[in-house]
Image 1 (cartoon, rainbow, N blue to C red):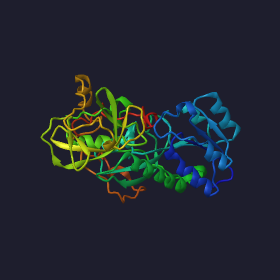
Image 2 (tube, rainbow, N blue to C red; image 1 turned 30 degrees about the vertical axis):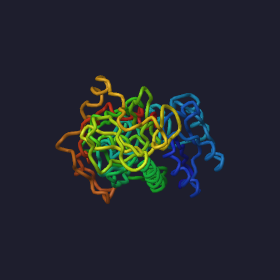
Image 3 (cartoon, rainbow, N blue to C red; image 1 turned 135 degrees about the vertical axis):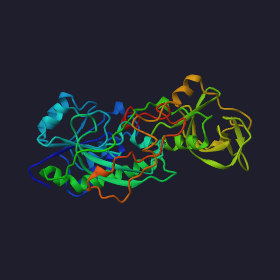
Length: 376
């Protein structure tokens, strides 16, 4: 690493920790770490970086706004040349980047230019993507539109959960940054413009996670997997209580019950929920209102024959909106080979490597994050 150049590491989320730990282990620590303050701990995936920075004796600033005078003064005080952003909901404005000799780079868990915008990890599952990527790119201009340094592609398994993808994305962010940090600080890192199909994924709110139990079992299962920890979770109402389905599976049987009806699914007290196509979703962990995770069989309220509350017409209308902007039937189902060389010219990768979002998976069904970070 260049002795003359210094970088600042910006992240308020757990997926940014692996890269910071690895760079410190290699003797390439940042000159400053900026993370979220405690009042933003409600954001999905929040991590307090105090323990990490103390262990490695790193200067640490908590800030909610990268545009603040406090952040600007800290960047100047520590002689920062490059800002590395690895998990932050707020765009970095040009006046901040222009104050740094080398500007800034970001790490985004989507295959840019596909997947600009919010909640990329949940959207990856909701859209049925079969492959995706973490993108290291230059900040500046329209959000998420900067030149690409490199991309790390990975397969998305049919039963992938947000929890598993979150951990994988953290590791890939670390690999990309470790590989390219020296080049970024020396001004020799590769860069290429974004080309081909562009899409912007909507931001999400926790309230968007309400499940439509008249949808198919596949859609319900996909929603639960997409909003698993560290996201707020997919939920349905039962007797006025908010029931968050933290994990579950589809049973290998059909039910004669009506959508939303609780049915017995096996020995003992195991139960499931009838979905709109007759399939049964079997919860494996849930929360009642703001309580702790519980085993579904431990709760006597879910008796076979009882019903989850019917969704309101407003909720049904929200969950049946059009798929994400930029998604077309023509582009659906096309994939990028997982072993793709990230240094290749991307001009032949013009299609959105996803499957079409199914019914009930439009812009009103999922956690928004007000970016991946705010729901986080």
